[in-house]
Length: 374
Image (cartoon, rainbow, N blue to C red; front, side, top):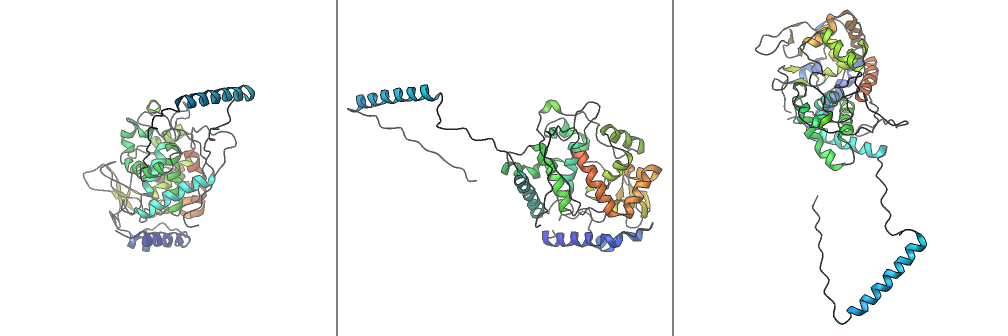
């Protein structure tokens, strides 16, 4: 299992090499050689407080004296309340109102856990945290105003058991210690903040964040079928994303998240990563779509593509729709040629996704978090 320090060094080297790779050509040689060499498919990488009390010992000959004193005390209290209208003894505590520093503390806790736990997949829980935030948000329906990140309804069946959400129990469990340490934050905000933190810590752009999502109960679970089916083509992709309110350019920008992570046969049936650096966010997803040669993989699983050169990468039918459809392909070409443009558009559209259907109060502050170590 690679150390967290060496993995961070690899990620930094991969991002530093991105400007040099922007001179993109339609050939498989454009893939970053060092990333390919470094990548190894399938790598694994309060005290409880006790309280006591004692029963006072009963009095004897002084009992009548204490009764008299008590009567005087009651009379005095009655006079005080009559004169002042209320007792001023124990004013209730003001409700806790989290500020930027509190949310930054949550961010830092998630980032530290990401560094400490590099045993998942290719060395990071980051990609699956992004997927959790994505799937929690992608259920939104603009016609009915239902779904979206406001609610965290994936905590409940049947939504937690939807096929598209298979494996996300790993991300939800990863965030449980953070919730225990910061019980004031809603699951709805925590899941989105986990995605924001992961994108930034995987060398992606800064993602602005607004707090204020509230958790809902099981009655708000969304029906199955609202998330994209990776086995489908362009028409299906448009139907899913148009329902949420996205246009074609935004759809392609969101798809760039496939630079991260991998598919698992036990979850989706598909298998493999999209890129050679699945824990670093770059525009390599678009470069590989255009510059590599793809063929159908010969195996017992569902239909998916593999790259002809290494046979270690995969693309899904929905991914290939972005180069088969002329309108989609124009945006793919723009992002393949310009990582900065991709980052700018990705940051804007992922914020839009994360905020779909959230009734933020007017003048809700927008936070931009510092990366761990900044």
